[in-house]
Length: 160
Ligand code: HEM
Image 1: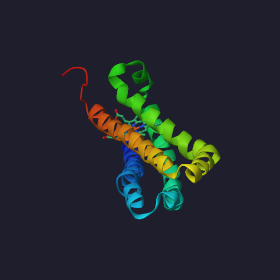
Image 2: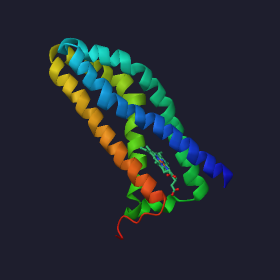
Image 3: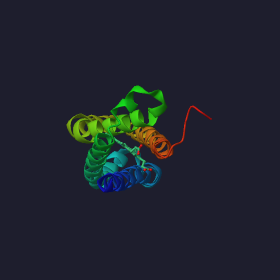
Image 4: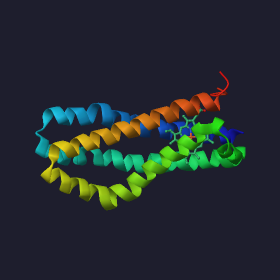
């Protein structure tokens, strides 16, 4: 029981740092760069500033995934994935999978180069795309956090 509680604490800590950072980037950093730099420079500035957060996010995403899997295994709760009532369990795995794919595969191997090339010819549209992508990821993450907290503390989403 103690290790389950510790895994939960680690899981929430990792999620707070990770999703909190996504919130900061989306609602503060991206708009500040838009206001302070001409379109042609925005993507380069954003990329330079965001790099450190991306490194942190790789660690916190891995921690959240490992602690989450440990809890699943300890609770033997795999059958939850067969029930729509546990949509928030699916949402956690989906959110984690999207970020993992972005941070470990797509961004370093494809997206970084693709966006830099696009930013050179269409800087305004590329920056808007980056902002929209962050808003979409933040929205999904916040729905997941709210669903996971309410769901894991007994809220019945289909019974009210
Ligand atoms: C592979 C990915 C993940 C797995 C396997 C996983 C698994 C779990 C498990 C088993 C629980 C405990 C549920 C319960 O007590 O009934 C939990 C809780 C939680 N998870 Fe995840 N999770 C993952 C990713 C995420 C992500 C991406 C987020 C946020 C965006 C998240 C946020 C939370 C929150 C907020 C709680 C509730 C903590 C509490 O209030 O006690 N998890 N997770």
